[in-house]
Image (cartoon, rainbow, N blue to C red; front, top):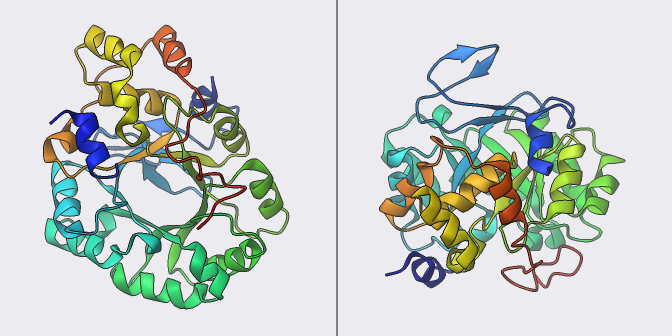
Length: 317
């Protein structure tokens, strides 16, 4: 089966600022080499770490679990076994317990796996955020959550939710808090009252929706930008320009796209049920794309979201 078909069947210079000082020099990228140098923790799997604005670090490439509700424990275990250390889930995915079971089954120590979850829009509207966080904590091992995001900017419920998240940070139950699907006006409004600054904004980014303005403005505010659906839910894998670049470098289209994300200074989470694809997605840290090819990929942008309803200012869920 072609990879683009496989992904769809399963539902599936801004970056330079992050790598230099325009974003306040707190977003830095370092290659993981199993050593510690200049207070930067390194590992053996070659995935760079991004340092967040609270001093913690997050792997630049992770494994997403959206739609993986049938056997999440198997897919997460396989992802960890091939080298992933960032695992992304959400309350709305309905698989938090399975995700944690996969971590346990992998045999990797909890401290060596970075777990992200997200507060769902419905619990924000229902006023049950605190209860939902307690449930997420229990499902994800009962000790702590590395990163918790507000999944969508639910109008009139953001400040209340953020205040609760800040309380969980103060208690040591959540180590970092951030945002998902926030536009700049949402972030600027939040920064007016936030006691804890968001470390990250997870937004839709892929070659046909490069989201340049949101990415650049997020990074400029010293907040990391993370790409969800980095391959465009598989649709961008069929792009002829990307296919030409892949052939030029003897890589897959997916590898070219993910390298584009990495060289923009973005963090990305990619999802697959196929172990070979999981491995392929990780095998991108032994080469660089020249600036001219990065510019060519930028030119693919058509402002096409994977779903037209994924508009942070007007979403139905």
